[in-house]
Image (cartoon, rainbow over all chains, first blue to last red; front, top):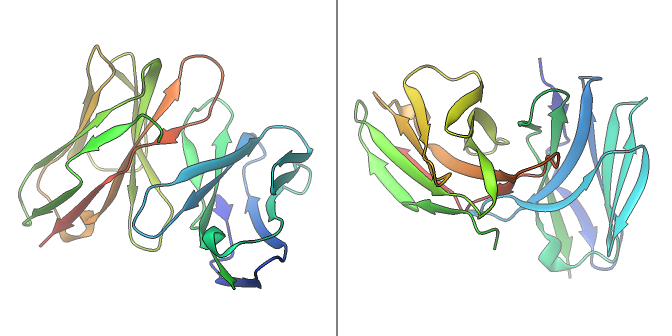
Length: 111
Length: 113
């Protein structure tokens, strides 16, 4: 049973567009939600985390959480070619401090 | 830079051998987790150490074992290596307190032939 699901992509967007990355999770006990960016051959790099329903903005990035729908998303505004990477959604389940990851969505931003 | 370091960066072993991977966590981080990331997959949780004790384990066999030292550095040991153990092994540390954010080291890429 998969606990965190992401579309593997690739998601292709032109430079300057908004990229929308989506993630669903199965455990309603999930409390914390994280987005990591991973360039090819590199380790995951934390972009954002969100705990509460609603939106959280950090620069060009906005995380959105809907616990009722068990859905979390990441919006990247003004996408740049340097944003081309795999984006990993991770969930922390109540009572545990470990992370459960999705397989990631590959984003390609074309100049 | 997260302040988490891992060694070695790359490693080639043959099936049946044993390997030890090392991790130094960021200062002030007392929880260390290890993850295995196979090609095209998300990281999979192996186990976690807090104050030198294992306090969580994923779905990995006992031939995956670990240690955490008083300075919070950590080791991952894998015995009887199998071809499927070929992966990127990631160490992640977490600061003290309620924050759940984990910061990853650069990883060790292991190839088992």
